[in-house]
Length: 226
Length: 190
Image (cartoon, rainbow over all chains, first blue to last red; front, side, top):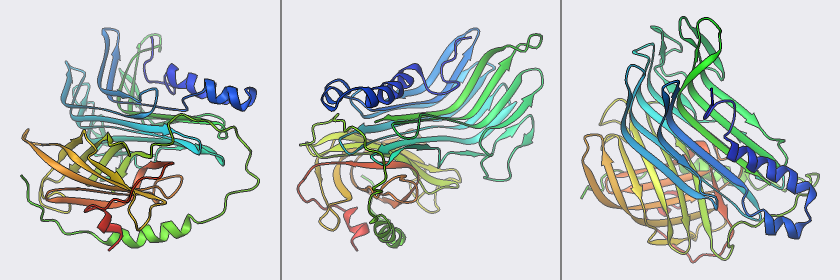
């Protein structure tokens, strides 16, 4: 299965981080400035449904190559028997200059219903922020939240508490779900990137155990390369 | 047009001042030297940012890009999970998109960290109705990470919300804009 948002950042952002990490060590300053005119990346999806029947992305936004801002809004989204949500929004912003770089993305959805009530959530919000300067580079997911999440009829966190990062719960007959999934990459000196998937359902083949699809709600990605 | 009724909230003022003081630490001389890179025209002052303000069931998410040549945009999403009426939810949940930057500058009170700008855009409410309105913004970059440090204020008619970020980051990019004050400038200068 070809993954869209899973296991880290998309190829474009990976290339960005790799470019910065490698070029920063090997190119003289003049060539660096001439050839490396971009040091930030960001991408957000309010939701992605990637199954054997096809891939659907909702409220997706990607940061322009020169930095700046991109956003997408959607009142409602639905995939029959698979996913419904309302008030879907993604916003990504960022820019690099001579002093440093910063990229940040939010991706959110409300009234989420996955697989006919197998997973529900009142509010989903992913926040990813990456930044770097002469002191180094770092990323974080602070501000991410998951309110009122219920999995297979069981509330996973009391009241408004957000589950701990990378909380995994099995879904019998379906696969498993990872809540508040966080992935950080980069060397922390010249590059850093963050991917946050607040609800990530891995659909598995019952016989082989092979992942055959995925449903992601609240996916925010950010990256900087110095 | 919506009426401007909500009082200024002064709670973030102290926090902002303390944060500003906390940021005045010298750079680490042992930090590795890195090659500089230039990706923007630094004759043009600009500020970018995005993230979240406050938490619980009454919070805002946002993203913006504003620059001194009066280009940029902002998206502000007010969340009211318990409905209208409480806190900043007198207007209920709404999404505002400002697609213009009419004025941009540095507040005289803190030109080093902050930028203020104004513009116009459209608010879309939960019932599907829309309203055109002007907006004021002030945003301050007090260092990295922005969570708990950076500051933003956003004002529409009948709505003003400000405070230190609970997620995300704000980054000011070098330049020397003219001074500019708006309704949000008063939040951290009163």
